[in-house]
Amino acid sequence: MLEETSELPRTLLITLTGKDRPGVTSLVFDTLATFGVEVLDIEQIVLRRRLILGLLVSSPRDPNPLRQAMERVAGDLNMTLDVDKGAGDNRPRPEGRSHVTVLGTPLKSQAMAAIAGRIADTGANIDRIERMARYPITAIDLHVSGVDPERLRDILAREAAAQNVDIAVQAANLLRRGMRLIVMDVDSTLIQGEVIEMLAAYAGCEAEVAGITERAMRGELDFAASLRERVALLVGLDAGAIDQVYDDLVLSPGARTTVRVLKRLGYRFALVSGGFSQLTDRLAADLGIDFSVANELEIVDGRLTGRVVGEIVDRAGKASALRRFAAEAGVSVSSTIAIGDGANDLDMLNASGLGIAFNAKPVVQEAAHAAVNVPYMDAVLYLLGISREEIVAADAEAGITTPEPSL
Image (cartoon, rainbow, N blue to C red; front, side, top):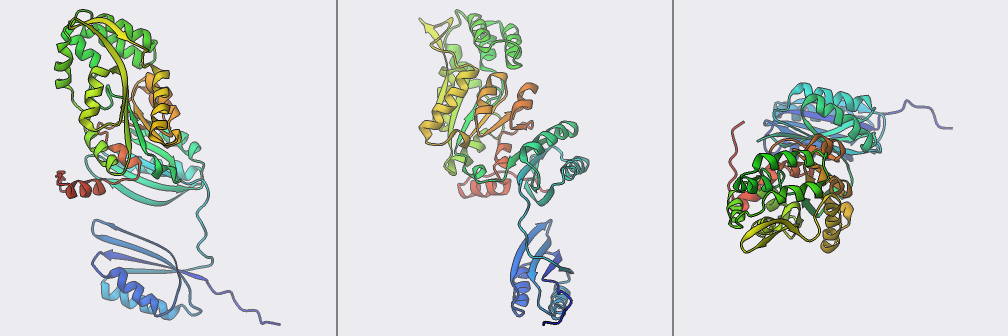
């Protein structure tokens, strides 16, 4: 019969912190190699030139020589060392894994404290924290485990409103990396302002049209009926105003970056607009957009008749267009991302795999999967796990200079 012996710890957690420099990781592994230990887990980050390196390794029967060797390494590097004995192996993280992306301008410590507190209240754990961007907004990605993503989204949506930050919660699965079709609204999303109001300014009825638009976007009016009512006010307008309005269009900040970066990664794009094809088709050609659908203004003898031609692209029509474009692109509807701001975007946002309310009306923010209230469309890239550093590096390779402040 074997003699009883005290159970030895099976793992060691080794943590080194200090000023980063080349060769630290190499020296650590060279030292560990002499003891033949198995590497079970590793995390390393550099924050403002400060290195934090954590290693979970199998423990030798006598861990003291390894500890002493690591103390010598830490001394040579002028770093702080901590070695903890463990009693178990590297267990997998709990089910219910999410990416929680937090956007702030600025992102204050009390907001992060509140968010971390709500996550802790669910019994979940924050396994990793990564910075996605530091300018012009701060974007932080939290890897969370131990809570259902839908439940976490509901809890953090309320906290986001209280803290005046944006929070997107997505299940941590392969779908996040596989989305391959972006479907965008145009007015007040891809571009700043509303085209119909810009046309109305040339027709002398801007205030009246703007009032109807606002009520329609809040969901207070039927979109198709409100569109006909607004277009009727444009009767007799010289069609040349369309060209003038197109020249006046201003893209949302970051719109070109969003399209440029994601097209490099193989994404397809579609414009689905309750606006007018006479402008959206030109916009699609300018940006290299793959698909486009919008309403068509009727023009006779060079003037607007006050009517639209064909079926109106309304709330249901936008969702139908998303499904049609997904089929044409050869992707599943669950692999689409929809971006919009108005009530007529709701069906499209809900039909997509990830519906993003971009500077949207309250009713839209409440219903969408995620809300972005910063004025930069390329913040959407952070929700997809793409960091600003990666964007800037890719642009530099293409000869595009992106100014960066010294922070």
